[in-house]
Image (cartoon, rainbow, N blue to C red; front, side, top):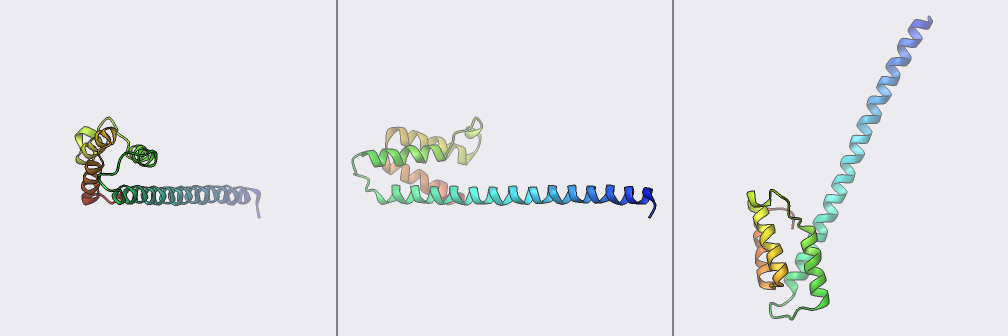
Length: 119
């Protein structure tokens, strides 16, 4: 084989290996994103179950406060939250969490669950 043909074949082989590497990197990133999304959904379900399991007349305890704080961290408020229905519900959820209004938190979680698959 002439040297020119070997150079051509090796350059195409390196381009093909680069394409394979980029595709595998994208697939791994996609799988990691799906795993993180699944874990977050499970965590939100756990928190919603814990909140719904508490009676509305339950006095605020350390455990309930930590659950409420964790729920607030899992629903971040963004600058554009006032523009969307879900964002307004998240703002309402944060207000209920600050007031420690358990009944209100349950209602907002039901509203979020009615149009979203996050919980």
